[in-house]
Length: 546
Image (cartoon, rainbow, N blue to C red; front, side, top):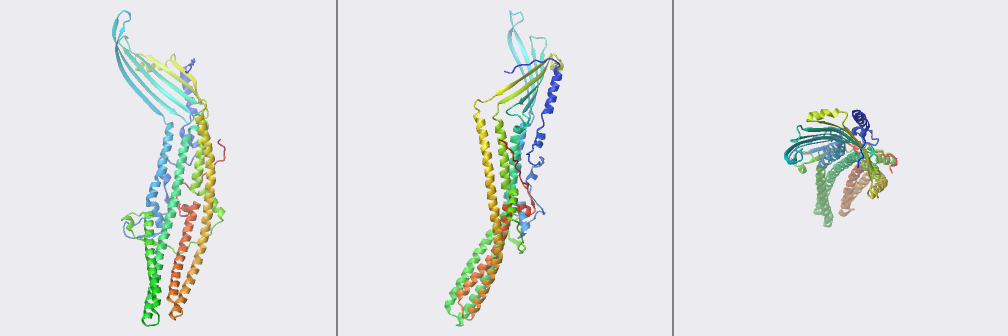
């Protein structure tokens, strides 16, 4: 039960003092958000799309609506970031997540309520003499309007105005009563302070930040897939050219062998080996063409150019055959860079920040619920609604009520379990970050080794190809003078074909290794000049929240 407290003095001054105190004590939600030290970077609320916008540092690639596509590696990247369907879907996530922030802010929105009612009651009552009964008719009109708002400080303010008018046939004049009241409730323990009341909003903001880092990670993966698909298609086309050249040579050798058998300078038994080699080369050509077609389809799916049916477009690649020269820094520097830039690391750090907020929230739940309230009111009485409102300024009619409410579960096991769980989840998140750091360092070091290995393989495979070509030339000359067999020549031709393909694969493998290295380092987008959200590293503050 709320005990009443009667105060003497001018109630208008008291009411004005309370309102002024509320206005100075209750900071707006927006100002509190800006003052949060661990808050995320500010983004304009009027536009959600720029938060998930990805901007290459070049004009968008405008593919022709029909006919073959002539693509450089840059064109393929620009087309993918402009048209890739999976990326279009992914861009919605930050904007969708941001709506949760608005939901959390709605807790602090003012709430307006109003009600109006009217009624009539007809009944028999005793007359004033008390000896007879008579009919009476009573008309009533009631109205109420209130404005309430919850502030991040844990303060609830309710401003209410009510009026009631009664017109009875037993009374010569109607009676009207109006009241203007202000009620302030302040949480003193559980529910007190901005740190607790803004925790859910801050958590929603972190979820939005996580979605931005997820978008960045997806974009880097897409970029690596586009570049890899581009070079895979280039490799497949080059393999077709190599096999066709080799097939042309073995067919010529077959014709020469048949001619030599016809003139009797070579045994017919030599023909089978050459025919087998021709068949093997034709089989390799079928496989190469099939691989190229598959690579073309995959590239088209990634870049998704507009126009005629997607998978029917022919693609012509335009690329510089020069191998990029790259001097790697010390592997420790690349590891340090990846731990700052990699989206996965930053997402994990943001998860730890969310765990910190959960600890703050559940720690507050351990406290008892103790609320201080004060209610001030002024009433007016008259025979009309307007008169009762005017009479509110009469200093002789006011009401004041103050008190406290206390609520505390005896064992409070629910709150204790939630707090203990939040601490354990925080510790688990810290261990998860350590695990991610180890995995990232492993990936970077492995990719670093692969870049160096694949680069060295380029020179080694070129040397192998030269030696195999010389061996083929020697075997061919020996075959012409009868000192070798068609089987040895066919084997040498097969070795040359494999060496030439291996040389091209070594170059493409080096390009793949660079792409993979930049991706695991978290710098692929930046190195390609593409601006995307989530490029700022997340900092963890080493402070105890337990």
